Amino acid sequence: MTFLKDTLKFIVIFILTIEARLVLKKYKPRIIAISGSVGKTSTKDAIYTVLEKEFFVRKSDKSFNGDIGVPLTILGLYNGWFSLSIWLKNIIKGLLLIIFNDPYPKVLVLEIGADKPREIEKIVSWLKPNIAIGTRFPKIPVHVEFFSSPEAVNDEDALVLKAVVKGGTAILNYDDLEMMEYRKDLSQEIVTYGMNEGADVRGSNPHTVYDNEGRPIGIGFTVTHKEESKEVILKGALGLTHVYPLLGAIAVGIKEGIPLEMITRRLETHTSPPGRMHLLDGIKGSLIIDDTYNASPVAMEQAIRTMDELEQKGGRKIFALGDMLELGSFTLKEHTQAGERVAKVADILVIVGVRSRNIAQGAISAGMPESSIMQFDDSRKAGEYLKNTISKGDTVLIKGSQSIRMERAVEMVMAHPEDKESLLVRQDPVWLGMK
Image (cartoon, rainbow, N blue to C red):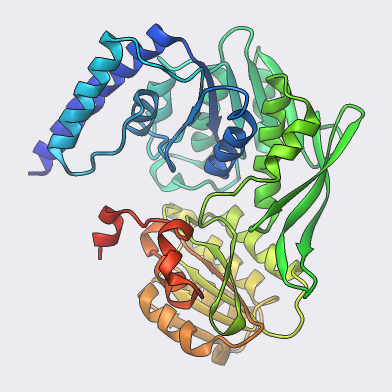
C-alpha cells in the first residue's frame, strides 16, 4: 500500500512540475523566492501586503514550499491531500492553463523549503527567481535530523539565492552571520536588511507597543533606507521574529520601485499569519501568545526573550511548551538549554511530549522549583490544566512543533474559540481529523 501511495505521489509531482514549468514559460511572471529555516511564511505574507496594490500578485498558500507546494502555487491549485479525484482535477486544470490564455499573476511570491536533502536542488533546477530573500540560517536549523549536518541544511537553502537569474537580486539578512558567509558565492546584486549598522534596509528601536491599560498590542520599530526613516507598527503580534520579515518585505518593495512611505503605510494594515507569536484574548482576562505553528531552537529562544522583556502589571508568566522535532543528535542539548532559559522567566512551566521532559530538567537544574512544572503527553491534557490554572492578568506563551498540536491547548484557553478557524493554525478538515 505504501509503495502504491509513493508511486502515485511521484507521478502527480512529476506531472504538476512539468505543467508548472510550461506555465512559467508561457506567462513569464516575475518570481520572488524566499528561503531559510525561520520566517519564510511571515516574510512571504508581508511581501504580498507590500506588492498587492501595485501588481497582480499570487503567494504560496499557507506554507506550500516543497516539491509539491511550489508547483501547486504556480498553477494556482490547492492540496488534494488523499483524494485521487482532486488530484486528477488539478492536473486537468493545469493543462487548461497551458492550452488557453487565462489572466495570470505578474508576480509570484514563493516559499522554497526542504524537508530532505536535494529537494531544493531539484526545484531550482527549473525555477529561476528574479529576487531571492534569505530569512535566516540558524546554527541548529529545523529538519537537521534528515541532513548530515546543520551546514548541509543551510547549503541546501542557499541554493535558492544562487539560482537568481542574471541581473536579479539576492536580499540577505545582514545580521545572520551564517547567511552572510554565502555572500561571496553570489554574483548577483546583493541588498541587505537587518538591525545592525551597515544593513541597506535597517531596523532600529524595536519595542513592544502597549494600549492605555498597559496590555501589549503589537511591536513597533524604525526603518531606515539611505537618508529616509519611517515608523512601522505591526499590531496583533510580538517579538523580533516579526521585525525581520517586515524588513525583508520592505527591501523587496524598495527594489520594486515603491516609495518607503507607501510601503510603511501598507504595512499598517498587515496581519501576520496565525500561530506566530500572535496575541489572543484568553479566558478569565488573560493574554495568550500563540506561537504554535512550529518550533525550532532559534524561534524558541526568541519567544522566551520576548516573554522576558514583556512588561506586565500583575499576573504570572506561564509557558506551555511542546517538543521541538527533527533536531536529531541536537535534541537533548537544545531542549535542555531552552529549559535553562525558561527558568529565569517563568512562574509556571507546562511541558508536552517526551523530548520536552528535557526542558523540565533544564529548568530544574537552573533553579526552577519542581512544584512549578507540570508534564503531559498530550496537548489537550495540557490545555485542560491551563484552563483550570489561568487567572486574570496572566500571560501564557504556547509553543511547540506542529506534530505536537499545541494549537489544541490554545483553543481551550482562548476567549473566543468560535473564531478558531481564522485565528489558529491547522484548522483544515484533514488536520482536524487527525488524532
